[in-house]
Image (cartoon, rainbow, N blue to C red; front, top):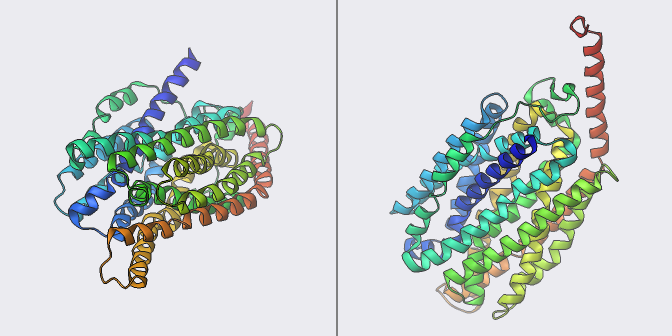
Length: 444
């Protein structure tokens, strides 16, 4: 019965995370019709994603701190209501400023999802099963993104982009009651030893762990890529390969669904297997996968018009290698952080890697696209930046994605060199806490 309850809770949390990333990716799926209606530049499209990330990162730390002390169920349910309502509100926007304001509201709500969800799962499953559980939770990234692209593009094609925004809020009507129904475990409930629950020092003591800094650095590069792709991949496919907003959404959905689910699920299974062979196996595997994905991403981006099928296949493989990151690296965080600090640690991780990396993904890619488009127009002697030049600019700008994948592989490899020592330090701290408890007056 307990196993059944654990799986029900996990599936509900996965559903919440799917909606989280569905609503997060809607602007990317609708980028082209919004750009044309409001006459936006690619930098402005990117700014919409970056503004989301800036607020998301800043409010995530206090919300993660709350998640370590208050009801995660109530916090997550409240966040889901907020982000869904603000997603629907974007459908009533009459200006670019209103679009930005709605995305800031979505950021405020969604900032609770990762700290509460990963902390909750850490208390549901023992360490030997966490990579698979966290991989399943993080399948919300590709599945939510895929569903967003699958539905938003065709709905926008048929009924307009505003209807697609409102439609994105509907699943919260079912998920919020389901979340409030499941049982929230006690903190540290899945630990093999009760002293694993204890956490000494302030919330900032986790930043003394060397591996965590390498993981934060890796988060900068992976999320730069993820948000650059989420913001511009449908637009890239439309401009380079000449497909409609519906077809670009479906193609992007294929990339997310097949590549993301396969990469995330298989990496989770591999992570729980390799950890029994070598303690640095999860981090080292993540580095190898990141390196394998870089050449595939490059080839997919530089392919000429008319090669949509091959580009989609290569992007699917590359995205799969990127999505393998979550189960492998998030479970590594839990290997070095005590339960009472996990919500706070994830919030700090998200703040730093979002502010330093993810926030630049949409805006910098969009700015590069505008710059390259201007250069292409100048080279052709044109005073006007036509759609042809916009396509060239975006294609050249997106080459930054495989570059970031190589940087990701390097920092993950560096983290694999320190994680064994950090895992040993945590075990030593646990042993000292256990010895202290055994000799205290309350132990007898």
